[in-house]
Length: 366
Ligand SMILES: Cc1ncc(COP(=O)(O)O)c(C=O)c1O
Image (tube, rainbow, N blue to C red; front, side, top):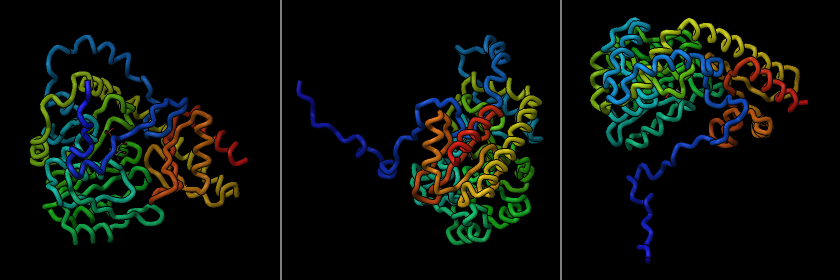
């Protein structure tokens, strides 16, 4: 049978969606995976406990749409009320809800540049106006240009990422406090603290003083639960109610909720492994700085990081990445164009993985 003329499906998309392409992740599984800021120290660590729990989950029923038990646990851990906690399928989901809830076509959304990519993608999907403020040449946050952009453009939402991904850089608390004070109360301020546990500084204690502040956290990084997909927001009751207007019912499966609860019962283990990640981050930083200091790569830049990864910039980035790939080691590369040209982001792995990475890098520079 003759088929009709082929319809160009992409052309049917809303105009702003036509600029987008599906989010892509390289399908191969490398032996050493240091490309997504996961916590390899915690691989499989709580699954025996979860297996025991799974038998009790009523999987024939819809999950608790309010994630009550999980929110209560997260509230207790963060010393807030459970009405001030909202859980999402990854903090990614909460980011998209915030944009859906507050951003009308043409509304401004301010972010740092470079930063986590989903703020821009969600803004484009909502037809919002993305207003990026570049970090300085050392990828450090400067409050003046950021506040100037906010005061000139009057954005609806502002994203501040601390520590930032992919740079690892931080904004000291006293600077953040000043920035927060200077942002108008009509602007929603999202402080993304996905890497909080590796850094230890938060502004979560300010959510009641600033009803426009949302602090975002995730169990994907320090807690080693990236495959489970649980993130959460801490904010005033009023703000949580507002975002909840766009939350679909039963958004988080019973399995996700149970897995998160089992994991949160085992926090001492998380804290133990956190020490290892932080110790290895310092080891990795010193190793990389040595490469520069002993002249093997005099152009290498190692950016200070308070997260579970380190960003470097070097003219060798592409070749070095290729060499790592040949050894089944995957780090995040950014190509040769744009603000992250010649940068590589290296997640801190287990001791064994870090040694393999360092040996391969040593070999490359020989
Ligand atoms: C800064 C930042 N925010 C949010 C996320 C999303 O985390 P998830 O959706 O896994 O909770 C990430 C993930 O890499 C991130 O780096």
